[in-house]
Image 1 (cartoon, rainbow, N blue to C red):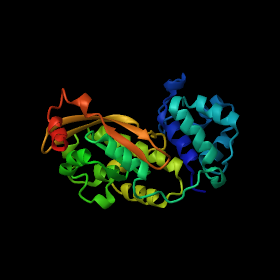
Image 2: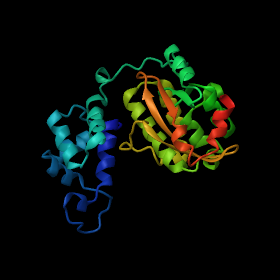
Image 3: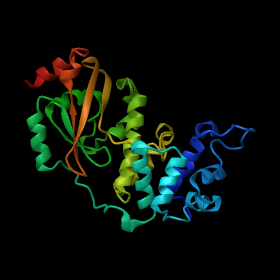
Image 4: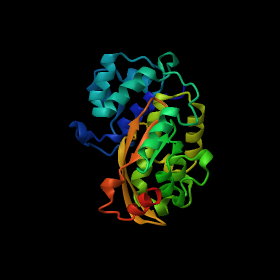
Length: 276
């Protein structure tokens, strides 16, 4: 049986930990990195055979007590603990997964109203798979010269970051952004495990080594805030903090906090002036 997402997470997390992380001696050289299955089983109070069944996807219904014990044994806490528990409950059990109806491909009327109200602050609407559904003129003034809107019908932050030939030239913090977007897509697969377009996008992106190396079960995050550091062809070095405002499960508004960035990035004033 092919491993499910929870099984993949278990295996990846076990390989990530060193014996010293859990107070065990390093001992002799190990054939594989990380903790042995038997070591995790002892720490969690389960049999090694049962842990093997979980890791191989042959058992997909661990109890709450087992999930808690495994999380403690593998040093999983914080938001990662929530993700771990969610995978345990939903993996290989479609009846427990959220429905995956097709997502809207255009901003809702409420989102369009918000975009207009935010002008001249740059803002755009983000869909399930980091696809840019709509934007206001202030964001277009920033994004279009970068190549982000080369094909407005298929504009996607992750696709641009990993496939566009200019992405690494215009994004000074490309590695940070790439990590963030891959983790956000991983989270999306948990929320919408049967979304065909999302899965197709990820399957295509995994053909790119830079994305594949980041596509790890334990790397999951919500795209809430951050900074985009551009080497902009028109405005030079500009650092743009952003915040994501969740409108519903399908669409969010990303707002660029240009007022905070102007002291360090005077070129942003030119972007604002175009729309004043």
